[in-house]
Length: 159
Ligand code: ZN
Image 1: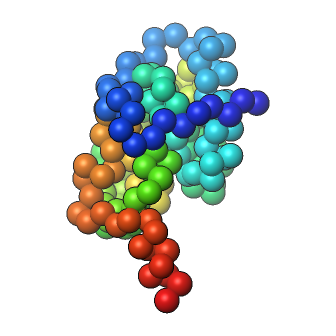
Image 2 (image 1 turned 90 degrees about the vertical axis):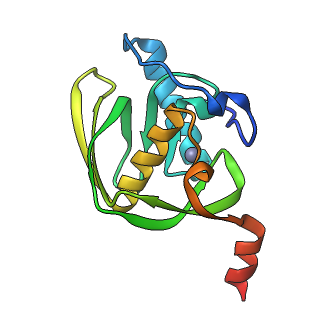
């Protein structure tokens, strides 16, 4: 198990486009394992490879229903909309209200190289969109309707 350093804020790597994974070798498997370890350690529900400085199309997600490891994930269908407060391990000082589809269908490969289809509603739909955005250098703050300072939000919640 290895915890990787999470890149934050203005780190340039967060703004780059990630490359498709052609070959699923031991290096990719280890990377997915490290990404999961890093996500759980940081108490996140998702992590994309660029967040640990690696420009490959790899995502891990766990919204409480078990670990999803996605290689070259692509949104192939989406419908509805939801607006919820969103945060990001790479933007530790802000939250924001972001409009996302209420339902998405994602195609990807799993760690065995098998094609999988993941259907997500609500939080899972949001996490899938958020993490796939990272692979294209897009951060939630680019899409946010309103940004909220984390300290301010915590103050409000205490009141
Ligand atoms: Zn994020």
